[in-house]
Length: 123
Image 1 (cartoon, rainbow, N blue to C red):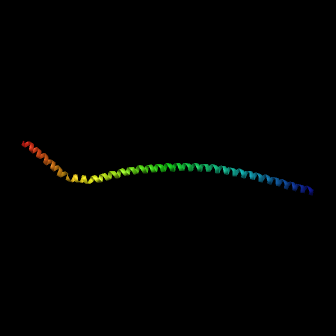
Image 2 (image 1 turned 90 degrees about the horizontal axis):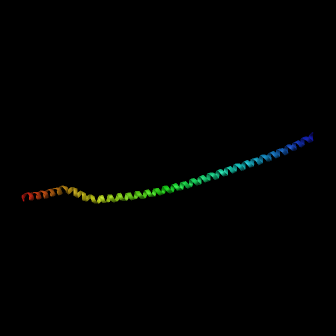
Image 3 (image 1 turned 45 degrees about the horizontal axis):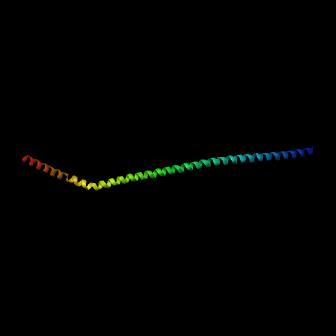
């Protein structure tokens, strides 16, 4: 009986060793699968990030183009307005003189008309 127990003990140790090996193998396989899944997900996310980066660069390029185009158009509009202001400022003194002398001019023209009318009626 004692010999039988030794053999059973050896068999149990051998079986335990086999089970431990299977568990270790199973654990390594699972870890490898998890690592593979992690790598695949990582690659997928990196592709998404790269696509987002490309989209961002395109959007920035479009924005900068629009910004510079708008800036150029607004600059042209501003130059036109400044030119009009300059012309109006140069005309203003002349207009002020004309307006201030309008009464005198009207009176002069009325006198001319009256003189012409009086001359016509005398003849």
